[in-house]
Structure formats: C-alpha cells, structure tokens
Length: 353
Image (cartoon, rainbow, N blue to C red; front, side, top):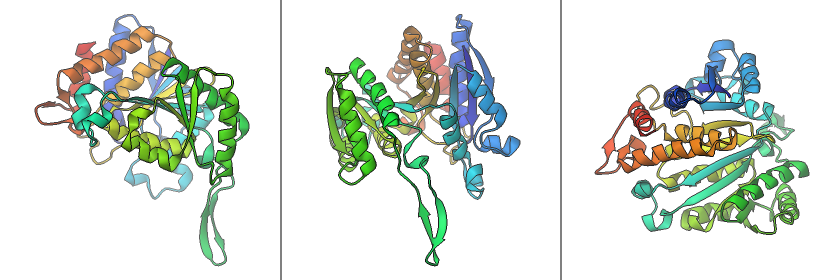
C-alpha cells in the first residue's frame, strides 16, 4: 500500500510527522506500506513555482492513498490566484476526482468541557457530514473579476449536474445505512435553482434506500440547529460551499477543530486524508499544534481505502486512551489536565498503540 505524504505549509509538517510516527509503528508491526513525501501548496510553489507540482500530482495518482497536512500562509497572499497554495488543494481534489468528503464530528466524553457549548448539548455527539467536493461555486464557470459600467464586478457560478448530485447521494445514503439510518439533506431550495435540483435528486435516490429516513433542511436553519441541538443529526449530506462552512461550525462541538479528521474519496475509495483545520501560521514551528485530527485521518485511511477495520479501531482506541489519560494540547486543555506539545501527543499515541 503506497501512501503519498504531502505535509504542506504552516503546521502541516509538524502534524504530519506525528501521523507518520503512527504509520511507522504499523509498518514495524508488519503492515505492508511505503511512504513517499512531496511538496504541495506554498511548499510546492517554493519548490517549483506551482502549488501542485507535476511530480506531486504524479505521485498522488500512483499512490493508493494521500496523507495531507495543510496549505496556505500569509506570505503567499499576494501571488496571482492560480499560484496560491489553496489552488493546489482544489486542483488535486479535482484531478483525483475526490468527490465525496467525509467529515465526522465525534465528541470524546472527556472533552465535553472543552466545547464552548453546554456539556448536555454536546455530550454523546456522533455526527457525519458528507460534503460534495468537486462541484458547486468553487469550480463553476464562468467566474472572474471584470469591469462593468465603470466598476469592478466579481462573479462565480454555483453549478451542479444531476450526475454529480446522484453519486454523492449514493455515498451519503450508504453511510447512513451503516449509522443511524437518518440522512438530512441540506440546501437552499427556496432561493437557488441549483439547490432545487439537488433536493429533487436526493428524493429520487432515496427510493433506493427505503430504510433510511430522509429529511431536508435549509442551510441557514441547519447552521442554527447544529449549535442549538446538534444531536438531532446523524448523517448530513450537502454541497461543497455549504459543507465547507457547516463542517467547520461542527468542529467546535467536539472541543476543537484540531480534533476533526476527514476523508475525500473517489468512486473506488481511493482517498486523500487530512485534518479539516488550516495551516495555523500563527503557531507554525512552535510544536503547539494538535496532531490528533491528522492521526485520526490515518484511521479513516485504514477504514475507507485499505478496508482494514481492525487497524482503524486500533488507532482510534489509542487516541481515546491518551484523551482518557488527560493529555491535552493547548486547544483542548482545561483546568486539571496535562498540557503537552504536538510531538509529545504524537509520542503518547504511539505508546498507546
């Protein structure tokens, strides 16, 4: 099993290093994996003038799975848009056809106090957001900035084809079947024709999954309900931009955005695995970042791409153990727990394995 390791920018190299420690333990225990590292994002631009260098894309295509850290940094903000780090991330998703993004939000009981919401609101939370990843306003054409009537106008196109909605719908219904058999489709069909089509296709696909209870919710209400009563949800499916926003909002439910992994899959379950947080340039290089989301992303890699549920459980149980030991990076620290560095947290997970 070949893994392309793309540390990226900011805290990316620090958190990915801890996930690699976990992979090295698995390798020492007999896992047949090999890893190769390549630059992406700002690191890709620094290396070759491209946020997704050709060699990196070639490696990612040849790999069975991709482990990615984070991209971006203020030093790249003045680059032309096609050269900015984020464009490398969008391009690799598109080039690898990673259309289904899985973002779980699971609250460990010991972290209920780290959430900004009341413990009784979030205790027991176990939510999955399925986000369509290669369509919507992020990729729709036409787009640009131009002069109209003597002033600048920026424009983007929200666009979904029926087939794009249908394929992510099947992924979401399949996941809901393995969870609580409840699926909430989030859109804005009262305003957007794009969302109107989304809703119609979801209803059509639901006929293939009679055991799953399908509900619908407008995105503004969904944002409110995620904060008001998040445990009403089991599985959510939504488009690219709505999923981007809602999954980041859900991160605070679990205590910190540093706790949330993600998987981005193609039709054959080849995937790219990454924490949902950004590059956090303000703490980069200071050994302060929380590596648990990246380590949990490795667990998702074993669960979805390698179909090795025992190893996925082993990694997740190791994370549960260090949380139960009251070890905390700064983002999830509360009074009475032990604050540790990024590398110390990685070492603790390795020890727990």
